[in-house]
Amino acid sequence: MSEVAASGRAPASRQIGLDLLAATSRLDEPTGVKRGSGPVDFALIAFAVRGRRLFRAAYRLLDATEPDAASALFRVMSEYMIVGGWLAKAGEERMNAWAINDLRERRRPILEMLEGDDIADENRASLEAELAATEDAIRKYGVSGAALSKRAAAKAGEMPVPSLELMAREIGVGFAYSFAYRLQSQTDVHATPLAIDSVFEEPDASEPGPRIRPIPRHALQGFDLYLAGAHLLLDILGPLSERVPELDWKDALLKIQMRLRDSRDADE
Image 1 (cartoon, rainbow, N blue to C red):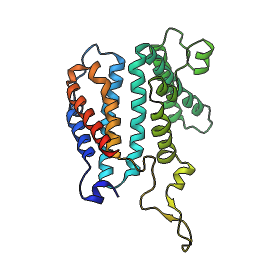
Image 2: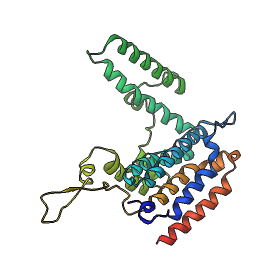
Image 3: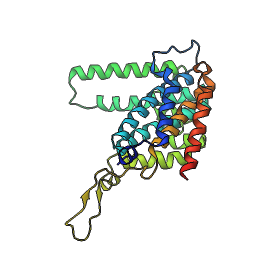
């Protein structure tokens, strides 16, 4: 059971998370972005908006005694945290290379589908239009004659874009990748043997076989998920305090950071 359902009261960390949502509520509104803002700022704002929505949904799941489902949402937020932190450090030039690499990745499955013989004419036309738009975007964001594939880019001597794991190491959150991201992926997101095992518990010797758990085990078993989620959202929102000061939430986030630290220390 969740802490709310089991005890009839919410842990203090839950209120901290709700206060974090309230402090950054400007992102719930159709807020304008300052003209001239750079692409990194737009990316961080987008991750913040999406991260807050996932966080709010995860809290609802925790309140409904569905921590395994909440953990899956926190896994998505972990990726926003890692990529956003890397972009904030890497700057616009490396972000541009990252964006072009993403377009190349999107181009590849379109080509693979177009090679099939069983595509209806209307679907082929739609895929060809998508392919043309993707290649136009690569040319727009790249230099003249930009390589359309990752292989061609490597032959041209372009520096490769780091993997998510290398991004995490570069910004000093390697543990967050190895534990929160990879373990959550294996347990809570992907169709893996671990995902299967987590649904069952070993029976007593007197029982005929394994039992289905009331709630599947999840990667963050034993942790205060309200606290973990609030820390994660704070890490996603933090870079915007300096980069977009007009949001005017720096002091509020510092206070929430201190409350989270005190809550964590009290649990130790």
